[in-house]
Length: 159
Image 1 (cartoon, helix red, strand yellow):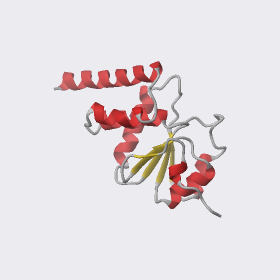
Image 2 (tube, one colour):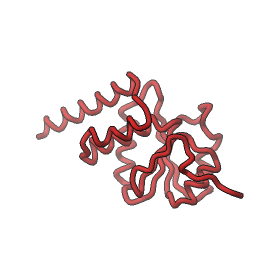
Image 3 (tube, one colour):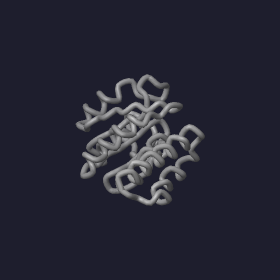
């Protein structure tokens, strides 16, 4: 059976040698992710959504990869989900990880915020991975602005 390439995943972006992001993969594309040496799949999408696979966790684990699900509601992204994502990313920096949601929109924002707030990237550099995929709507612009503002306030309070 010929497997597809992970590069065929909707809005696939290879951000580094260890980190790739994209939209919802098909079963064949998840096989390709595993065949490409990824060790973990992180899903920020919602289970039960029309785009979701019926048992993504079971499939990913059957392929020998670790699976982490951090559900992020499209119209109500929660700061707690971002903090869970930050905590996870901080523990897996040496592993090959594929992070996805429905169309790589949620993921692009979460990864950009991780790079800015946790890794010290310049916002302009980190946000190119967002604008390369989409122009964030009002909900997501506000979410980004609030997170950046909160962190800036915390840093100035302790500095």
